Length: 135
Image 1: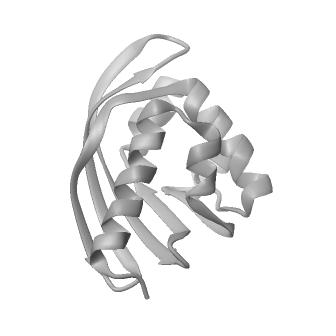
Image 2: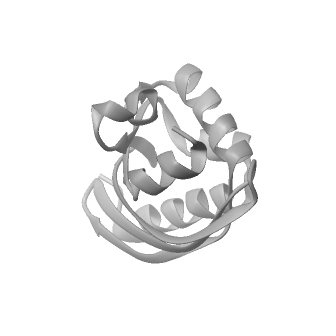
């Protein structure tokens, strides 16, 4: 079980790498078998499907970083309880293809294992994401 200080430091680094759009650095923050899911209705199809492992996570992150500019979206709070953490982020996101900007918040539930992210579930305004992406 990670201690709170190391868990918090790892998560702060992971979110900073996301803000910078660092694909390889971000991928390295996840365990090889990590799962990632955007919480939302199955009606949104692949957008809310769980991906598992680096082979599936890599193309998801490539798309995420190509489509969204996270540079003005930052961590506001991290709560750590053993291997689990809750992360609240807020700020502006830019949907790169249209250059539209939206102020929004995200809330993530994370499970850490061996000092890396093993499970990641992001709660966001899926209606906004789908609308901006034309889904």
